Amino acid sequence: MRLSLRARRAIAVLAGLSALGGASALVLNAFSSNLVFFFSPTQVHAQQAPQGRIFRVGGLVEEGSLAREAQGLTVRFAVTDLAQRVPVVYTGLLPDLFQEGKGVVAQGRLGPDGVFRAEQVLAKHDENYMPPEAAEALKRAGHPVGAPEQFKQKPAKP
Image (tube, rainbow, N blue to C red; front, side):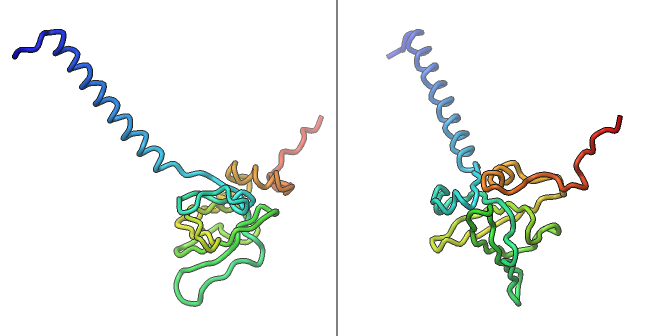
């Protein structure tokens, strides 16, 4: 049995649409699995962060919370937005600029015990920079965010 020209064209169009739909589904799936959301410690505390999925938490390294284990590279600290705090554990080398009271963004998963297990830790890279999400979370908590006085632009003299 021989298909008419019209039937062959319809089959070709349907096959093309199916291939396009399959490719689109694969691209969207890859995009959504690589998407990493940012949450403040207040949002994590309010259970708005996903359990068992990778996300970022950012704020300030809480003063007095940094503890290094005697053996190995494991470090424990807390990230705060001055309203709530999230305990973090990280194994690896910390950035040179990482210190208490400074901005940090950690990427990882929140465990069932409420401890954030970071796979990556990013420290702000100079006195003028803070990730926008972290700065916004600190502003909502009432923390003065911005450049230190020594870096602020002075008004021009007449």
